[in-house]
Image (cartoon, rainbow, N blue to C red; front, side, top):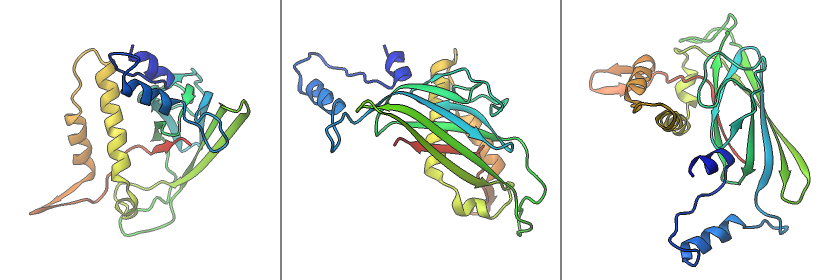
Length: 222
């Protein structure tokens, strides 16, 4: 039963009876309305991701299914629901969130390193979300972000790195792999290797020089 709400973005309520308070409260919250009296949800959504040539889409982890759109934006590395740049969501809530993963495939000359240097290149990512509002209207929400591309030794990375977002995205990968892989998945080795690549250890303390994951976007809806 869990795969049904996981793929559709629906709800799974564990209750002994339909008359219990937990079931009634869950049902009331599910059908809550906004200021205009419309259901606080959206339906039949499609998320389409586009990006510039420096970045490729690796995949998405969340309550969605692949639309099997292997466009030029799709990279070789697959994370979660990969091999596509478009996903379908049966339902969207204000608390719905999705992790979209990317890989950097090319960096032009002039990348900023330790000590500064020439201005480095940047990559742009566009999220196009088309959905049916509970009022019946069709809506399109477009979010475009531009991110500078820096090497692992750039001093700009630790100043702007979001540790909480990275922890959430790494946790999503661990949960996804533990559910789809045949054997038990232990993310410890992967995390240790990542930390070993991007952390500098000093005697008596741990100095964070840079922690660079493939460019990620953690964009909640709406």
